[in-house]
Length: 295
Image (cartoon, rainbow, N blue to C red; front, side, top):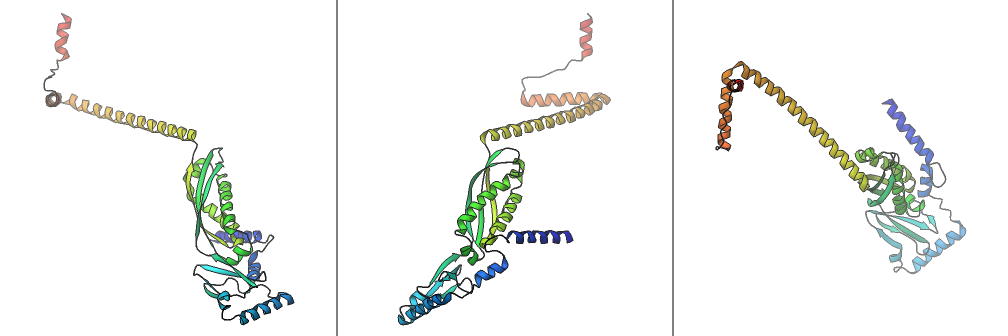
């Protein structure tokens, strides 16, 4: 248990170190994004005051331009004179903006799915395969998804294809065909770490299909057929061995009782009469034939 806790702490520290690079990173930077400095300068305050005056002069018509609505699954990121408004994302419900100086961007917070296009991958054992998959993700922090990256959806799609190739390049063909869940979990972990700075949460990754070259399919089919034929021959040989042992035991029983041979002969005649009643076989003892051979 102690080692597991140390591993978790080590992974968390590494993740924080990765987040310490250039750009807007870490908890303090996220807080700075959601609660920016509101000092927009003298010119900025003049423009905001003019916007408020314009709104008051044009009431009640301006109210339709100032009040906005976002749905339950959306969040609004408001920019005032190009800077983020304190308080972070707004919504769901009503929120207020100033005309001329404020603008906003709606961010969909629902889970989004997309297909990873088929990727030509060279496996660890030098086999070329075509693999595709599906990714489920959602926006976890709307502010980061708007402020840290131009297009979070397109970036996540490109990163998913690259991650799929990188992960499969470290596996051989047998592992790809048998350990799909492990590969999907590894991809999810890598994508989740990489998209954390974009406010994206990767919820699930699934491998859909693995397409093999036609020559390799034929070779694998021939190998499987040969393996089945070998198993069939082994099973047949084992059956013959067991049958020979049973016949040996039966011959020993018949040798001990001469009447048993006569009963077996009558049973054979009964079987022949039921199927081919025009044919009757009479066995002749070899002792009778030896007398004719001597003469």
